[in-house]
Length: 420
Image 1 (cartoon, rainbow, N blue to C red):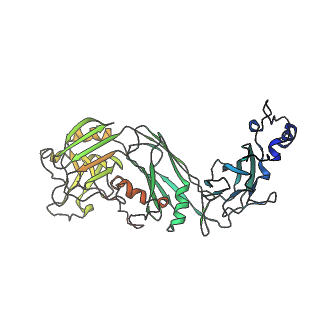
Image 2: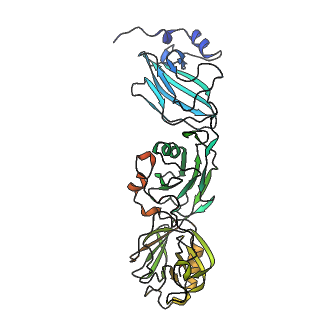
Image 3: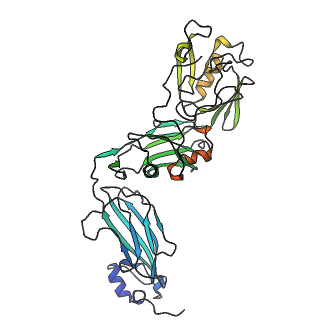
């Protein structure tokens, strides 16, 4: 269809140079306006930010950029603050409107770059800057990431501990959207709301061996809801070691240890006897202790009863807070590989326990199969996160409109010494 081109697209190079600044070549050597540098798109767009110089914008209001007529359209918008935090947004299919979908931070300086094209396809651009006002409340939501910086096994979840309870779904979404986990190589992962003050992050599958994981928060200065604003958070960097998995078969009384998918050892073991069966499922190494004094009274066994014990235990690798370990058990060597005689721990010879102790690190996987015991708790007794299937895990995210499914605050089990 024939039409009259917009004046902006056919003006002389001299005028375009004036609009863009001295020394900028606006037209290509062939004079075709489609090969021109972007024109100033100020006349094509409207912006809902502050119109008076120096006046701060309200961070509670979303950004909106609109094309003023059907003679052109918006092709792209990028908005970020001075620290590099980007504002997420949606652009209408016809290019008529862009609006932000993530909150702005208070007391921040923003740069918004709007790209357009007119009806002839000539590109335009406008750069807008503005500041947001300071928050009116001093109440802050602070986030602490865990574990501590270091090298961990492929099963190590990331934790985010909040210092205020967040119950509202919309507020949870604001918080979760600001908590970023980046890994190299990249993996699919998600946060899960364990309770109102704690989130866990894990990939769909275990972390890749030798991955680098970086965690940071973009919540500072962002309004969470009511009078609560995001505070600062210390970023976290982890490295992931080899993929170490120990599979404990309570029926065959054997532990098979794999490194990066290859079997490296098979160890005769004993697990929990009737009434004290070892939990089934995936557990994550929590800590390693060369020496632990294990007493039956700490796990509810009356002193002086037939099951009472008070033992020095060496090479103890902890897998639950309630007292389950993999450890040296020289008193049960005759049963190892043949029978289950422990009070819930996985026992092995001293030399095998020393080897296991020196081979695994925090975050490595210890999986128990074919036990008559209960399933490992997902939360509150260590890291049972991997016992939640991926579809259910995703529903624990506020960004997937799921209902978080976990224990109430304060339900975490108290750390207890151990069951031998």
